[in-house]
Image 1 (tube, rainbow, N blue to C red):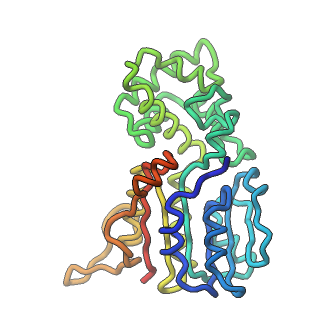
Image 2 (tube, rainbow, N blue to C red):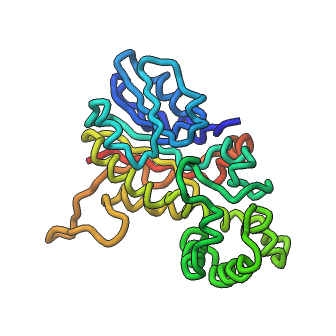
Length: 297
């Protein structure tokens, strides 16, 4: 079972405004969003989809308007240039880890299965979760848990891991979870979700990759082109929200003497769109999704 596309109609409604246009789906996965985009395009329209996961290539779409690029979306701009594309009408990025990646136990993404510590979205890359847990020093681990997992007890967690691995390497997800068996049962699920999120973000450099993609999306979008991003945790959503507001991730933009600054995008809606109860009931992984759409100024 591949990723059940979240906010499918809402995202593609916001994205496709020109049936003859050129669009990008940054996260192809099972192809749900891509197929919906293609259904809205004319014979002149084109869709380029990105996915670094080799498994996603099995889902490619046989359509002359469609091109699947086996790359991380951090290479958006250069990859499009290889096809002679310098400007596009819209970019969609659904940042969720696919259901397929969670359900393939050996990938190590899920807190429910015992698997090797991996968590790589691109299985060809060198850094995996095992190296992070066994090779990073205590300060590095604490920072990852605090900033990426928003875990208040980050320093204690890092200390426990470093102490344990002196005696024995931490090889699997169960090995890691056993270190924290002292946690009260009512805290376990949320804690592991935050811990695994933190490690996964570090392994895949998710926040840096997101920043690179957003900047490149702005570069390749035509004026009035649309950027649609579906995020699943506050770290991603804050970056997206700030970038759509002023084209920056930190600091404040320069203002004129009247206090005005140059906007990067006009927001389609001032507040994020979230799935309704029916969608959450049908797909529990949609419950934390937030969608924001900007129109390039």
